[in-house]
Image 1 (cartoon, helix red, strand yellow):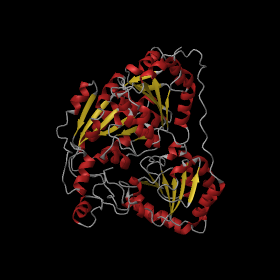
Image 2: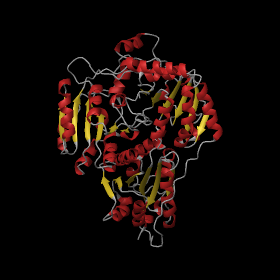
Image 3: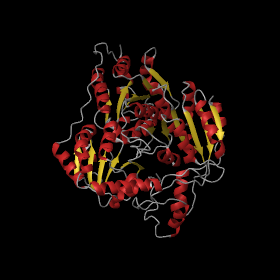
Image 4: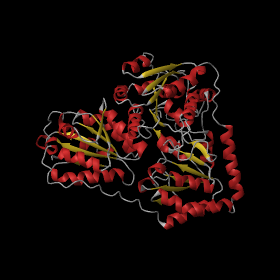
Length: 579
């Protein structure tokens, strides 16, 4: 029983059934210990794919994702996936091999100080310098990853410690997760006082709802209070699409109804959201008339970007349960009539600005295709890459639960979609998993088609191909005087032939009248399959809030975009990065 074999047994004791990785010299004792074990190891084709796959596994399941790599370049290739899990609060444990302890600090072959490299993008890091430290390290790693605001934890495992004698170590026993404390009564009273005074309240829900296992409680709160609700990118699905109180996503590419409601509100009830700049637009002008109730388990978020009039720190589920009945009483209180009128105004705007899918012409209209696919596969888990297609999915897919929507939110990492979809498929082999990607993002981790083919993972890939870096092209069109710089992807490979080379069924569609048959064929294909969709390069994502503007100043089509290009509406900071 060496340390590597002890770690394999400890992972099983922690409930791990699948891990994603790529072997190499400094992690070889661990891979030897895996041989013949019950753990399912998924061999990806790049370590970044391992980190994103573990990330997708964790997002879809709510369990801890685990990825493994060797020292040096293996560890450094994990960094983007680790950062993504940190910024989007995804529970992960990352195991990296390291050179023997006697060689550490000598610039040995494939030595990198991954402990220091990842310090700012993990909740905690460990270097296992002695066999005796291993039980504490593993127990704490999983406890920290799961506790409070989830996130990644790194275990750097030197090669000589891996082969050290661990026969004296007791079998591993998982440690309990720290309970998120209940909110203080005083903060609940402050929140209720603000709710009783509001005439035009809005609920602003974020990713913390799913992280706190509070989806059903959140829905009970919204239904009981009948308050119009907007959601962040990570909050989509917390209230089902089509719900009469759901005004849609707010922010840079949010709906008219959501953005106008927030800007006109007199009270924002913020549930598990962090006032991200993509949601708020120009922060100084965000919801200028609103007082703020901010509910979050992480005290660091309350008041970080917008001062809270009532900061409610603690368990979100407990908070919402405590507030639901008292807050619902205000539906029939002294402000009942203005609140009813406010709700009617919000719902009328949602109807007036509802998305249209009757685009003219013969070419494929991406929003219509995505909306139709969401109807064909209503329970699908959707993994997105980053760019225009990501925003179209957010706007037009009809999500029923936040764990259906896997997207790189805070980091915005291209290359996320395919490996994250594979991770989601591994956590539930019977799940319907769809990867929506763009031609730019797809080639960043295209090698994971080999992983899909090897394990016959039935992920369905929808590849929207406009032969450009679409979001960058859109920003260059609108804010850089159409000076198109390095966005041309007209030399893309034949994606159908590429998929076929990996042994994956490929289909193609380039006409609107063929979309229905193509989608039906895609979903009926056994095993992994790719649908290559040719779309118009000039298609843009609307609405769009320009940088340094508030959320009421939305561009909603080519006419308003042309106005931006020639008027004082030009953003003060044209060098702001795209979403």
